[in-house]
Image 1 (cartoon, rainbow, N blue to C red):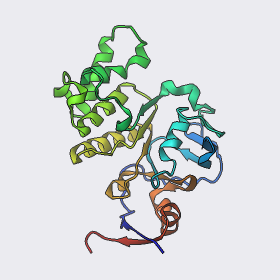
Image 2 (cartoon, rainbow, N blue to C red):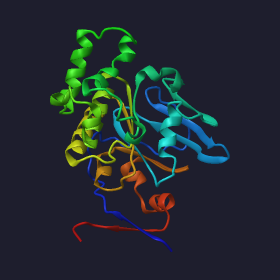
Image 3 (cartoon, rainbow, N blue to C red):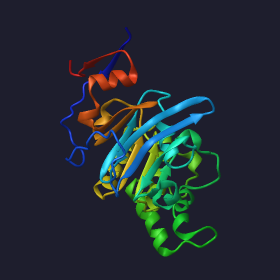
Image 4 (tube, rainbow, N blue to C red):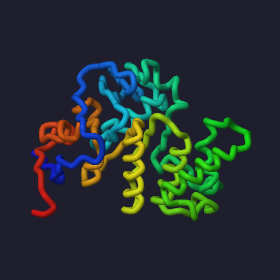
Length: 273
């Protein structure tokens, strides 16, 4: 039998709210949450997601976890209409989320962004204001101040005039985080934001995620890392094409759930051992 080892997590840690999210087995209605019911996705003849049911609540940092090919990014993209769902619904305030994308800030994987595009850090961050102002309009003083504040928040003010392609991976991620902040959205979706970034950027990212959740926003993050970073999350969605488990960290991170998602016999170990 294959053996898969995972770090031993201190599940008593709580970075944000204290109330646990109940495990969701049906499409229970919660007006302020994102309600996903019976969501399925096919790529031609291949089934990428099967009958996913979960609730993503505001005020909590929610992570989508699972092995490679589990459908993590597919779930996020299907929610936003970036890939077609073969079945199911995604509702927010009782209406299809795809009809309310003006309320969503989405940051794709870094590998999907053209870093050779001739734009400065300031240009990229100001793009986040387009939903508010429309194209081909001059940005207002308010929009410029929002952008300045976002850059300060992620520690990138001094790079405002730097071409985006000349930054490190971590710096680029902070710029796109700032762009998301300028959208002043209700829902923030980040696809693999922790890949290829330095420790300083990771600290900034989780600080901002925590602030957004504390402000009552919906914050959803695709992440493949089962290491220490998982302790920052309040709630988890564990996938392997099927929904394995959803709920608080304590509810989801069980030996049975991890074994079902990743296969093999799970052995916990401590770095101190």
